[in-house]
Image (cartoon, rainbow, N blue to C red):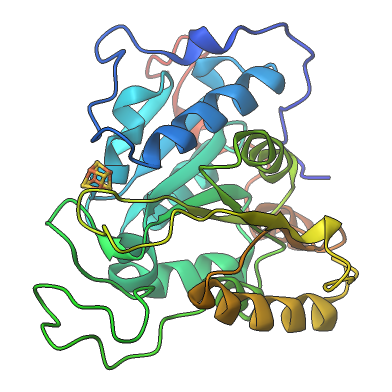
Length: 301
Ligand code: SF4
């Protein structure tokens, strides 16, 4: 258990509490998978009984970056690939916050790939949702780290010569203590996984498959999908790192052959999150920085 986890106060919350007055309607393109992330996140926050003031949502750049405008909470629409270091700093300063970072596959696995790897390695207590639509959407469809080999775009006219990144395998090997994949076409599973990811003490990585019908017209719609926990073909123990790694390796390739497997892949409940580890070593002040400098009304002391 994290030293600071404030979740679980059993408050009854309507998910409309997470619809902001300023931008209540998201303006993503019709049919965009990003709507599925927003819906799942609102549902998860309500189910957990969270107050918008208990949440910080940090987003990167891309269509996905608008998530922090469409979700009522503290928000920070940051710079390209840098949502994780900002989220880490905020969590260290105010550990009582429920910190969520979000961005696209280009933002998180490409431009911010180094931050992704080290945030997983250090097991910072936060949830990272990556909208994976296999392209850069906002900038009109360029090839991204998860684009399939052969994918044609304005930047790869003859088709990408690169193998796609394997984000689940990457986060597992880097050290993430919760790894899951879900999809916008599977809203109930998506909400359940985000609930678990937020509750988990440590770095939770959710690879969220989101279709982009505007710039990735040839892309799969991620249906039909199979929940890996209900698949007899992939019967494995999600607490066993080796078994989880094998399941990831096979299913990440299968995605590019039209086989969409989603669900929980890995969970380590024994590993301490970064702040707890530091507190136990005496290398972090017991009183968080936010409490040293600000009173309960957020005024300078
Ligand atoms: Fe969604 Fe693609 Fe439109 Fe961006 S360009 S809002 S990712 S459908």
